[in-house]
Length: 139
Image 1 (cartoon, one colour):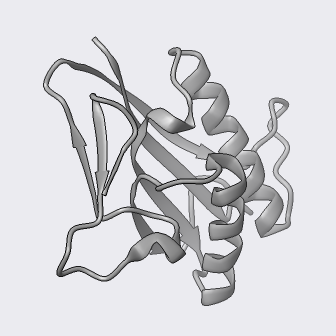
Image 2 (image 1 turned 90 degrees about the vertical axis):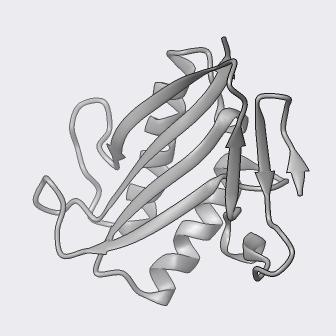
């Protein structure tokens, strides 16, 4: 169990396997007096709309884009309660890349609750990765 703050508690309860090696927590509990921030799916596009053909570069850029969107609300990665990740042609190798990039973006400590969904394609041709988030801020 880990508390990030009074408004967000990340929990890995006894009786469930420890998911920390896979970069997520089982449960994110959000206090009632909290402002929720929902960030739409962020892909690996740069500000000018360019999309790298490389999976790792797309993941890294998508997480940068997520950080930019969070910052616009006064939030940061430490405020993220839940991620939903979409991966085209998902594989164990892509999961490893995502985990490495997630660790770089989020740093040490518990990661948010996360659901990974393998998909056949995303909105744009060549788009391989998308991440959306729910963050918790003080009311």
